[in-house]
Each structure stands twice: as structure tokens, then as C-alpha cells.
Length: 595
Image 1: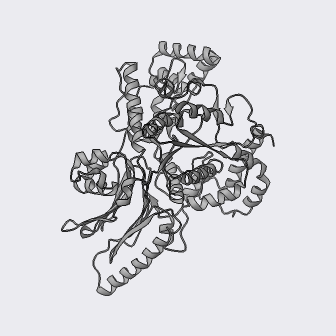
Image 2 (image 1 turned 135 degrees about the horizontal axis):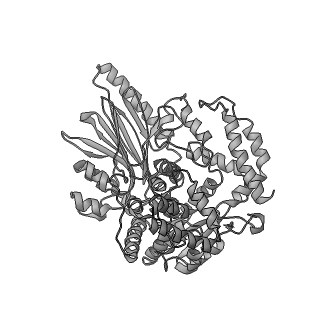
Image 3 (image 1 turned 90 degrees about the vertical axis):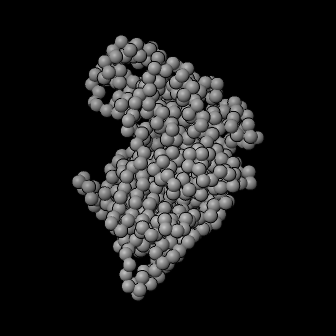
């Protein structure tokens, strides 16, 4: 993996004096842009500069092949082109087999394979390539710059255009360093503060800076002298068809085969024996990933290093009720005994300075965030993974809406809307007996429900570009800060396409939800975890306790936030919105921890 940045001047020919002046300015800007990456965990920087462009790539030697990267790649002649990429491919062999040109896989790095494929078959490459990548493809003779990234936004770049000069960069600092004063994108902040949950973005392209955009997942942007052309090259909803008629065994075979490949394909052999880690909880998402990752690594004599957030003292994290589990050590220990090659690491989250941790984190992320409780321990997990020499850090962040999705209410509403009343009655009866819920209450809820809760509506979130953008944006920054590359098999494009094709009853049926894991992965996950439908773990509860305990000091800091009025119709000040959000958060944790 790596980071890419560059400047391309697309302006037409001017006088010699003007050309020299623009070339000189470009070089000064290039030096500033390069300086923005001085603190990133990069093994080396490869770059090239001419009068009208500057292209650079900071390479991380995460995979064995990465040490052979020679950016920028270049083809000379009439169709001259140059290419830089932040890339790790999951289907190197498939690209080579389809598009030819490179036969010896062991000696050619991912960037070169992707470049050769894109040069010869650009549209087919966009459709076929899988992995984590963001790329810049320059054709100097045509004065054309093309930016594109992977279909689910694992990696991306920011970009900005001014006076036919295009700036692109993996880090925001690579662009913001080029001037002192940037205009605030008031619409971005308006949405950020008014969304009353942990979503930081509701639009996949905009940033806090007016004029600076970010590639949306699965997007290609082409800059020419005439203008900018954007398009989405992957749409899993186009031509979507529900796959019916298979036996239960057939569905199981299909799901497990696809998901196994999703997990195994992201595990790459690293240079010098790089290890593999995983963000692991007692839940189904990360355990589904571990179910295939641990045996795959064990067969190669390797360990799987896990990282789990826990409170220091169980009795201090008192969560009312029996459903929530605040300390997931016991579940992780079950997984350790089950797989044999798991080496757990527990991160204590209820000690330290939450404010100081978030200040450091905000410098890394470059953009405002709301997950002030989870991101600090995730950042610490990345740092610990780096200390254990992990090149890849697995997770199952997107699994709730893909591999482990399942929801009774969505099933009930779908059956109701489709007129499948006999099936609905059966499902409600089973659910009512198992969970001791009133059938009368269930029917009243269904018959008075507003539109939008059935499977057709919920499935739109299986490919949610705003959510994918937010996850990917944070992951890229944490990766560059630590040198560890995050990979989440639960948001593989193959898995997304598959779950969009499955009937609703494959996810929830006969009193059991999340069936793709609970049913289909039996024997691969500890039975105690699969069978426990009445508890749910909470990661980072210690951070919640810190928030409550340190609230008075946090209030003092919030009091210094400027009170300028937002651009939205609500008329609230930003200070009021910030305080309102965190006051609500603190009150929740004060109740939870009784402080």
C-alpha cells in the first residue's frame, strides 16, 4: 500500500515566460505537497516532475511484491502515459490471466499489474479488479488526468482544481498546504452537526473545505482542458435479481464459498514475515472473518493476532440489564481455544485522558469526527498491530449489513407487503414463543409501520457510499499513521453483490436472525457464540466511562468553541450543536455507569 499525490497543469500553450513561471510555481507547490507526508509511515517516496506535472507515490512495503514497485510507471511513444497508485490487489492472477502482458506473477508488483491492465482494457479492468486502491493515470499528450478508486472505497484521494491545475492527494494536508486560507464548506458542517448520530457524512464526495472533493467509492473522474467528467462505474443495484430456487445446502455452499474467498484473498504474504492481525470482539462479524482467517494462517504456520477493547475492572462498567456484555474477554478466550493459533491482546479503555487522545487522533484524521469513544481504542489497536509487525489488520466493520445481517421486523414487513400472510403468521408465532413477545403488539407495530422498513428498503444500505466513504476515510489515515493496512472482507464487492441477490428468508427465518453466520458457519465459530442470541458485546465502554468522569473538563473546552451561526435553516450556532451532541452522549454514559 502507499499514498499518492501530485499536481497536473492542463492549461494550453502560453508564452515561454508564462510556461516558465507556471513550471516554477508547480515545483514550489510540489515541495510543499511532499512535505505534508513527512510524518507518514512510508518506506520510500518515488516521484517524477516535468514542467506540466508532478506525480509521487509513498510506498509501504506491506506485501512481498511491494518492494519491487517503481512508480510512476510509464509508457512512452505517441500514447504516452504515466501512472501512480495506492494499491493492494486481491485478484492479481485473474487480471494477468484476462489481460495478459505479464506472466510471471512472482516478480511483478500490484501497481504494475493494475497499470498494464488499465492501459490495455480500462473498462474491463474497472469491472474486474478487486482490492484496495486509488490511482492517477496521466496522458500528457492529451492533457488528460484520470482518477479512480476501488468499488467500495477502501482507498481514495482528495482533489482540487484551480485555473486548470489539478491537485490530488491521499491526505488532505497535501492540498490544504498550498494556501493559507480556505473557505469553509458550510453545507458539510451543517449536515455534520445536525445528524444526531455517529454518522459524520451524508454525502460521499464533499469535505469540510469548499472546493476540495474526495473520490466516492467506485468512481472515476476525468480532467481535460474542457472540464471534469465524473461517473460511477460500479452499481450493484443495476439489474439486481433475487436468486431463488436453491436448496438450503445450495445457499450454504454459495455463501460460504464466496465469503471464504473474500477473507483469504485479503491475506497477503508480507516481506520479512509480516504478520496478520484482526480487530476481534465476541460478535458475529469479526468472528465470521476469524473463522476463515485463522485456519488459513494456521495452515501456513502463522498466528492471527487479535485486538479487543475491554474495561480495566469489570465492576466499574455497570451496564443495566442482561443483554449488554461490557467485557468480552471470555468470548475471545473461547475463540483462542477454538482456533489454536489466535494470540489475543486486550486494550484497557477506561484509563487515560480521553480529550488528549482525541486531540492526537484529530490530527491524524484531518477531519471532524463523532466516534470519540471508539476511534481512540481503534487507533491504539493499529499501533499495537504495528508493534507486532502486522502488515494487514482484518476487521468485520461492515458485516452487520452483509454477512451477519438479519432483522425480524424487516422479514415481517416484507412478508406483509408481499401478501405472504400464512408465512408471516408462522414467523410471528415462532418469534413470539422464542422471545416472549406479545403477538398483539407485533401485529399492531406492523400494521401501523411507516414505509421503509422492509427488506427492499433496508437492502439499499448494503451498498451505502456515504458509510463506506466514512469508514475508508478514517482507515486510510490510521494506516498512514501506523504503517498497518486495514482490510475488511465483509465489504468485499463480491459479498455485497451476493447478499443483494439473496431472498429475505435467507437472513432471517423460523425464529433465527443473522442466519448466514449462525447457520452457515456452524463448526467454524464456537457454538457458545453462535447460539447466544440474548447478549451483545459493547466495545470501548471504558471510553464511555471516561467521558462521563471527565465531563466537567470537557465542558470547559467546549465553552471555547466559536458561536458563529450555521448556514442551515435551524439557525443554531455551531457551539450549541456541538455541546448538544456531546451533552447527550455524556448523559447516556452517566446513566450507564452511575457516576
